[in-house]
Image 1 (spheres, helix red, strand yellow):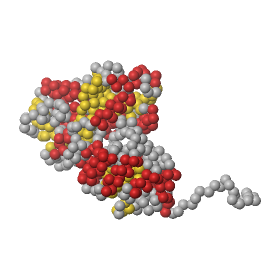
Image 2 (spheres, chains in turn blue, cyan; image 1 turned 180 degrees about the horizontal axis):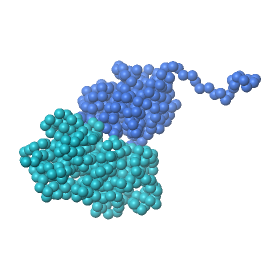
Image 3 (tube, helix red, strand yellow; image 1 turned 45 degrees about the vertical axis):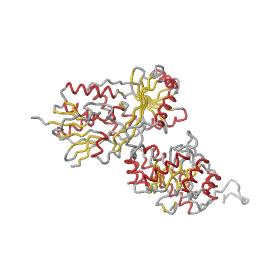
Image 4 (cartoon, one colour; image 1 turned 30 degrees about the vertical axis):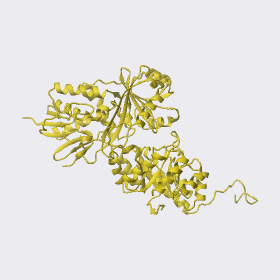
Length: 256
Length: 326
C-alpha cells in the first residue's frame, strides 16, 4: 500500500468529497470503495466562524485520512493562507496544493505551484502538489521539498482519462522511489486501472464518482479497477507483440 | 375543548402546516421571532420552482413522487401559480450534460430550434435544442408566503412573536432548530435578482454546467431571479463576490442581453439539511420536528404538512421521511 510522508494508507484509491447528491451518499461511496484518503476543500466553505464545520465533521466521521486542499486558489498567497487555515481546521500538516493558472481548464500554474510548495514545505507542511505531467515541473517540486507528486491525467472534471500516457510513464521512470498519484481527469474505472498498470501508487478522483447516476456503485467499481491495475503491475505483464510481422519463416500455416 | 397546536416558525413549512391543520379543523397558533414570514426564513430566498422532475435527476424518487402534488396544494391554498413547464439548456461544449440530464429524467421532450422558438423565442437565438418538462410550475415565494400568511390570519390563525407555546409543539424553525437537531446542517445559497427590459423568458430556465449551473425564474415585470449557489457552509449572510460573479456570468452566457440588466438584489441564506439531504418528520417525546427540506421547500412542504397532520391528528404514520425518536 502507498506510503505518504511516512504514513501507510490502507487503499490505493483516494476520493474527493465535492458534488455528491448528499453527504449520506458520499459516506456510502467511501464505505463501498474502502477509499483510504478523503480530500476536502476549505476555501469557499470556511466563511466566517468555521461555518463549514458541520460538513467537515461528517468527513472526519468517515474514518479515513483527511487531506485538505486549496481548491479555488489562483495565487501563491491565497494557497498559503488556505493551507494555514486548513492546518488549523483539521489539525493536520497534510495539504493537497492546488494553484490554478487557467480558470477554464483549471490547469495548475506550474510557476506559482513550485513557489507555494517551497514556502509550505519550509513551514513544515507535507505537500501533495497537484501538477501537470511536465517532468521538469515535477523535478522542481521535488527540489522544493515535496515527497509526493500528483500529476493530472486530464483537466479536473473532464473525464477524459489519460491525455498523455507517455508523460506519465516518463515521470514514473524518472522517479522510481517517489510516491506518485494520478489526480484528476479520470472518467472510467478502466482508466484508473491503466494508471496502476503503469506502476503508480494511487489514484485520486472526485467527479467520476460523485456525478455518476449511482456514486456508491461507481466508487466500488473504481476500487476494483485500482486493485486490478495494481495486481497487474505486480504480476509483471507480458509486452504486446505484433503478430502481423512473423518472426520465423512460415513454412506452412499449421502453427500460425 | 379541542386540542391546540403550536407551530414554531412561519417559513414555508410552518405556514403549510398551519394551513393543513386549520383545514382539518384543528386549533393552531404560529410563533415566529418576527411574527410573520420574512427574510429570516430561507424560503423567502427560494426560487419557487415546483420542478420535481428536474430535481429527480439529483435526488430520491420519494421527492419526485411527493413533489408532484405540490402545485395542486399551492393552488388550492390561494397561491398564484404559473403552469408553463421548465426549459433546460446547455451551452455548446456542455451538450453531454444535457444528454445525461435527459437520460436521468422522466417526462421530458427534446425541442429543436423551431419548437423552442414557439416557447422561448429569446432562447432560440442562442440554442439549437433544449429539454422541455411540461408538467412543472413555478410561483413567487415571497408573494406566496405573504398571501398565505394573510389568508391564515383571516381564518383566525394567531401569529405572534411572544406568545407562549401551548398544546403539542410542532417545530418548523429550519436551521434555527440546529440547537435541538444535532444532525442538521446549513447549505449556503446565494441568489441575485435582476431587471431587464430586453430579455423575455416565459418560464423557469435551467442552464446546465459542470461547475456553474444556473436557474433563472421570471418574476414578472421584467424581473428575474438567478440562483443559486450550493456551498457546504451554514453561513446565512455574506454573499461573496465569486458567487455573484458566477451567477451573473452564467446568466450572461445564457442571454447576452443580461449584460445591461439592472442589479436589484443580492440574497443569501442557508438551507436546512440532514445528511441524506431529505426532509424528516421527527417525533420525540417533547415535540415533533419538521425540517431538512434542503432545496425542496415549496415542492415538499405540502406533502410534509399532509403527513404531519395525518400523524398528529389521525395517528397515521407517514409513508416517507418519518423518524420516531420517542
